[in-house]
Length: 103
Image 1 (cartoon, rainbow, N blue to C red):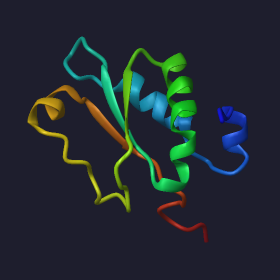
Image 2: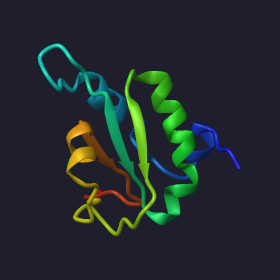
Image 3: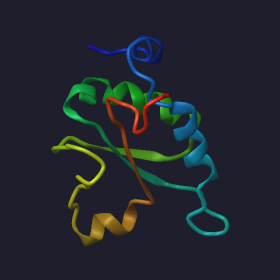
């Protein structure tokens, strides 16, 4: 099933505007923006991964990889191998909950 960003936004705030801004403003070198971005989702958000990629591809010039291995939190970064790690310019991890509570 394919989800729209609006449908995803009804249940989750993935802060996609911040993601787009980060990708578009990231300088790999002085002249080059991010080219390859790895997206990491916890199991509950994995069904939305391709919809998120479609949205981000519309808003940026980057290419995206989706990590479908485990993701149990921010410290659970994927082990990709040195060749692939050299090609990835940015890793973005999505989560179910806010990092800091509102008081």
